[in-house]
View 1 (cartoon, rainbow over the protein chains, first blue to last red):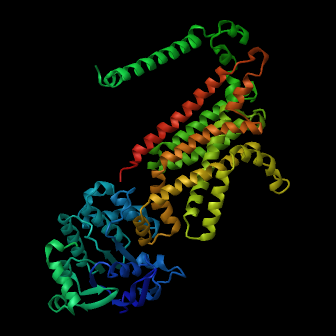
View 2 (tube, rainbow over the protein chains, first blue to last red):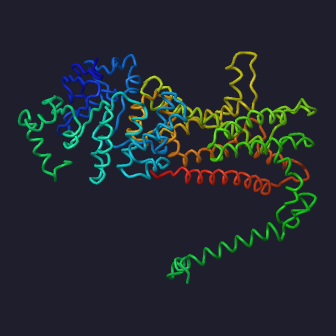
View 3 (cartoon, helix red, strand yellow):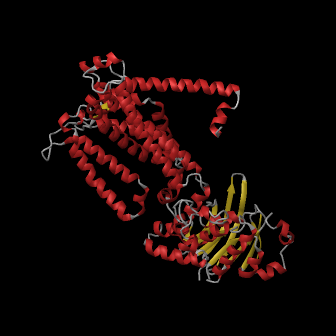
Amino acid sequence: MTPILTMRNVRKSFGPLTVLPDLSLTVARGERVVICGPSGSGKSTAIACVNGLVPHDSGRITVDGIELDHRSGTAPDVRRMVGMVFQSFNLFPHLTALENCTVGPVTVQKRPRREAEAEAMALLERVRIPEQAHKYPAQLSGGQQQRVAIARALAMRPRLLLFDEPTSALDPEMVKEVLDAMIALADTGLTMIVVTHEMGFAREVAHRVLFMDRGEVLQDSPPAEFFAAPAGPRVRDFLTHLRRPNLHHA
Amino acid sequence: MKGWARGLFDNVPNALVSLALLWLLAHVGIGLWDWAITRGNFDAPNAEACARTGGACWAFLGDRWRLILFGPYPYAQQWRPATALILFVALIAATATPATWRARARIRTLIAAWVIGVPLMAVLMWGGIAGLSFVPARLWGGLPLTVMLATVGVGLAFMLAVLLALGRVSEMPVIRALCTLYIEFFRGVPLIALLFLVAVLFPYLVPPGWTMDTLLRAGVAFALFFAAYMAEAIRGGLQAVPRGQYLAADSLGMGYWQARTRIILPQALRTVIPSLVNIFIAAFKDTSLVVVISMLDLLGAANASTAEARWWGLYIEPYLFIAAIYLAFCAAMSAYSRGLERRLGVGVR
């Protein structure tokens, strides 16, 4: 089977700052990949390149057979297959939780409203907040908002779901409810790329854990190996810092 | 002492200022009462009779109010603009009621009402069929003219303004430059000059054989002018929408117009309701400038109403009358916008 995502020699700079010098990455269908690394290491930029939210400068990105090309405008086609969950939720504040989940299917995929609503309701049940369906984002807690955001991404029936530090903006007591929803999602066999520092999550659901620093992948191995044998001092340092709880979110 | 009174009289200087202001207020109030009621003339036959008592000449309004409200529209036919006006205001009120937007069936009814209502109003105003005598648009005037001009002008201006605002923040340099140029030009030209230009210059600009009603021309001039102001207000709203909203819309695969109509504009517009209503009110009052292109709107009709020997020299009463009408319309707009803001929870994120 062809991989769902292929990145070949992807380069991205912001002005004089080169964030991704030369990134190559392949993700197979059904694979769950966790990307970790210190802040500023290019993890978020890397996944934002995947659905074209950040246009890459050179190299090739192919998602499910479609090459992401900003000149010929394939970005919307790619984005329809790739869901994204943001660190700061980015729910639409003028729409209810349910409407947040139906606006994409109805507007972009032209699905009948009724069908989209039924599916959105089922998704809200899956992330365990069906009772909040008719509330506005401002009336929800951070954890609830992030679960609505997951349901919103799922409503598009994505073939690949990207998570950009989904728990970093949450109060500690809400991290678990979001992680639980993500773990439940992993059980469905969805392909996921998750940028996170939640190593417990990585250990439990990831097929591969990637460590990035300065735009380079320094380690790419299954979780057991990743935690048992960190490749090199930078990975080891990072993991040591993570284990000290008071520096958890630093 | 009650709370408010304590603030007014809690020390000697405050008390002195308060007393002086109270005295002034009482003086003005008594003077007004004396002028309007005690010495007011409710059934004087002419201005001379009013002048004898020195009070307000309400008899004038009783005699001439229809001229002020409907301008030169044929007297016996004035039920037609009156009906059209009521219909128009009712349609606008129905359109502006948030409850109407809720259900699709209601929206369909509303569209149907407009589709039937607009030709009906045209028939009422122009006539010429169904046994109604023909009344050319140059004889329209007064309140119906003001309201229609303001609505058409503001409505067109709003649509244009949305496009201009989007253009001004566009990533395409040519579009951005054109929109900026448009906004700077129309903001920099006095409205009166623009009205003259449209009235005088327009016939030379369009292909020969085309004609355009003065009323429509004035409406277009208003739209072009106020679109520039509204565009800047809306641009402010666009800039207030967080970047994450654009990213989220993009991440769902939305195209440019899908993202603008579903996600960005609904948020941008609700933050700028106060400044938009501000511009709407200014536009409503500025319709009075069409006097300069010899159209008799409410203000023009009020001016014209005194041009009769019997009521010569009266100014205060007609101006008070139309001021009250303008005030009523503007107060209704403000009240509506306050209600809308509360409803949409502006400032509640």
